[in-house]
Length: 98
Image 1 (spheres, rainbow, N blue to C red):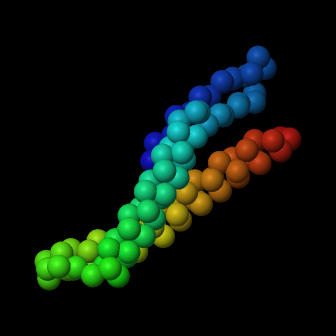
Image 2: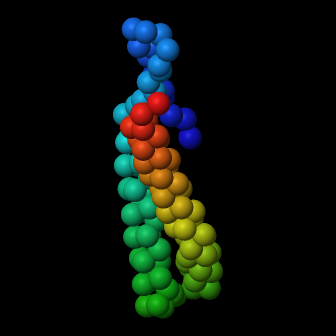
Image 3: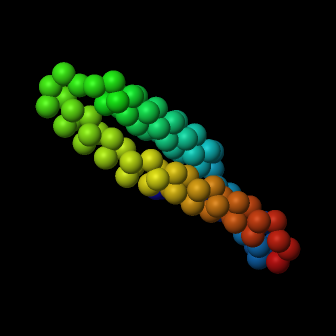
């Protein structure tokens, strides 16, 4: 994941201020929508499988989709938590007096 950074020197030239750009907010928003979409797909596939499938191929495909989504949902959730934590720690460290 790439974050845009802007480093600006203060008039004294000793202190530097770094700011994470708007790009972090956009990425976090996209990750939340991705997680919601994966959870919805997981729920729909489980419902379809519970209703019953007409063919063995359809049942196999739904089972594989469910298995994949069960790995993706925690991965995306942990990524969101780590990104939010990184932004929070950055803001916390930036607000401390040097």
